[in-house]
Image 1 (tube, rainbow, N blue to C red):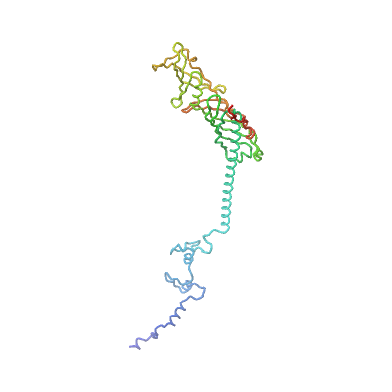
Image 2: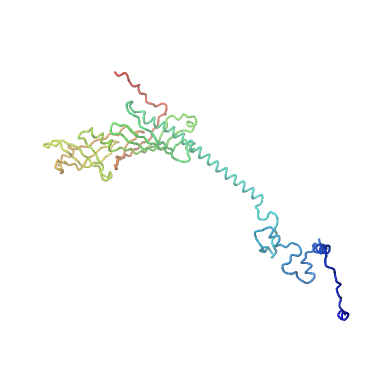
Length: 366
């Protein structure tokens, strides 16, 4: 049976179990040779195809892509031109050195521009502060130069220079607008509570600014709002004939007037009405109207033909305003009177030269 079964066939020779030496030989033989021909070419020559999922031969494009992009996972390499995988090499996905240098230059230029802007703004504000101090001295000298020695000088505050940038105004020698508040001004009439003024077009040559020798300062125009409180006006009117007093009603839209008058056959009588304030030739005048008698029985008796004699108009002096201001209009509100005032071609005196020369106070007691 054995001889018959072996006819035409080669019977394999029994082999001994593989020992350590045989296993090492098989592993060495399984290492790819240095032949540059890839494994897929050998499969192509034999007319067959490599099994699916085999990793035989040289490293594929997918392997290169996975090494360059480890976050891509097991996804295949994106196709490039012609359906071939794109070449992956060192430096791909990074900015070129030339572009990095250009970005660095732009960043340096931007930082330099910001620093220069900050320096210019700081210098501009410093120059404004110094100029405001100088203008405060000039304005204070202008306000106090003509005051009598027994008059308390007003307070100059809130000096502010408008316009930005200020350095260009210094270069051209003209300040656009200076705002100032002057408070507590004594006049021949009622006390002026405040003057809010704007001086426009101050001419100071840059040479005088740099040498700190400003001197007199010409001013083109001055616009101001002069405020008088009702209390100060009533203090002045109390010393006038008739002991007139005023009182706002309806939020200052109207002003009531009251006082006393000597009426024939009736003697001293209380009178009342409304009043307006008129401005003529730089003079403020209280003009009563709708005046009537107010008797003890609390009724009004019109006085035909005698209104002007009972309560005449009262002039209110407001002279001695700073900057040679002239009033042009008057209005009333809930707290007092607002006078619009203007001036042209004003000259601010030199700060150090125009100080009041008052004699020393006599404390001898004589």
